[in-house]
Length: 180
Image (tube, rainbow, N blue to C red; front, side, top):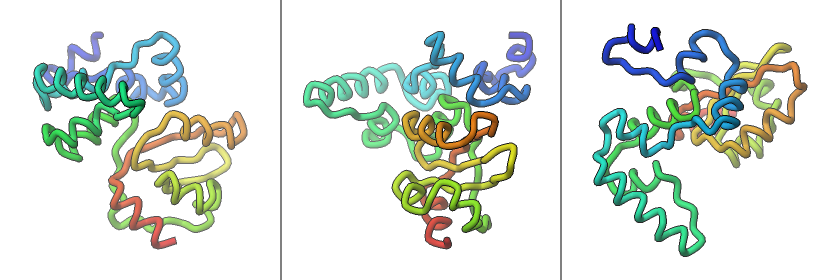
């Protein structure tokens, strides 16, 4: 709380602060999920003043209508479709929700040997670029965080290997994947 107060106007979520302090990303995710403290995406949009309470209510209503048809529509996707936010804002909210840094892949040359760690087909299907891979850890850029995919990736590596996820623009990820 003290650290949040010192930021003066630049409010940070607890996950962001813990990440800056060096707490592993997975421990933060587990704690937020175990204690049900992960802030909903719609509320983060409102905290950042990207949408109004009325826009959130409209999106929630649309989400309920889709759910009645057995269609899952993520809040961020709905807000994009409604035209009340843009892709950059959406990425910023995902970054805060999932405690992931946003990285630019402009000028990044992906390594085919690094990419083999997750496989070409898997990377294409889930839009993932391996940024770094060594004995201690692997760092991956995702276009769209998916908790199931992230868990699958974590389980694919030895338990002592640190797995870190970042967000990157889907077009930049696509360009990197075409380079390999």
